[in-house]
Image (cartoon, rainbow, N blue to C red):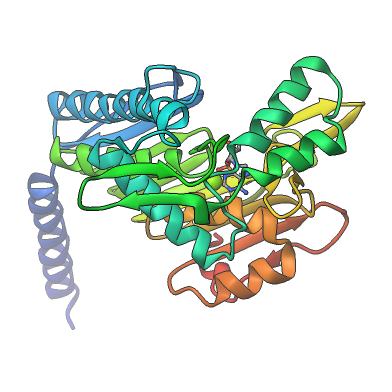
Length: 342
Ligand code: AMP
Ligand code: MG
């Protein structure tokens, strides 16, 4: 080819490239990103990142999510005597207590997780959790007698849910519900839904380390990336997970624990023994919904490494990353977990 025609061809190609770029720029949807910062809710902190077509949609999406958290907290907090869960805890042995559809949904799901995990997850673990909470305040471990007494009042099989009347009833006196192992996940799923409806193109929603991500990621990145913390060393990043249109929940004794008799006790209780579950320092579950991830992370902490791996491996679209309590021991993963690790 002659030099002049080569130059012409080059000019045409460059011109075409510039034109393509201009069309692409014009067509690319402009978007706004907002960071809510950390805000206190549901007994912990929540932080949201949102991507939206404009500022108004971004702000509306954040407001919609926080409205969901406020509603879930008002319905389900056991620190609030006026919440529906507190009312159930007070009255459900004496009479059936009618609850809101959202509460009924969480309790119904909780029963399914109890069956699925053979009672490792148990929403009626309240009496034992309460006992350990009191121990934290007194600085002394509960007596074996007190533990045995509390344990008698734990059992998801004594929880009666009537879908017709949306009522809750306790089969034993002294039962107490504790939604701490599932409510964050439920709130995350509802918040993601509310944000989409409010116009969000994408978001990362974090409540106390349980996270759901959907849609477009911030900074034009291809994926939402979530860091997994080392339970041993404060703040050390262990690995990064790609969480697109999925949720990740982490349970572990490094995140919350009670110090009594100079010993750390996990806030997660093995309902079979009424003792703290301590085989795993950290359990991370990756799943399609946050409620699924949340409940299974709590359950897996109780089940210990072998049983937890077998169970999670058997559930579709659900992965686990388990960090044993006795380090240095290998991190255990389900076979599909590697795909989510960056
Ligand atoms: P998470 O951080 O999601 O693992 O939830 C831990 C919280 O769940 C605890 O603080 C208790 O309120 C509650 N909990 C503890 N043990 C259990 C259990 N075996 N099943 C269900 N909930 C539990
Ligand atoms: Mg949980």
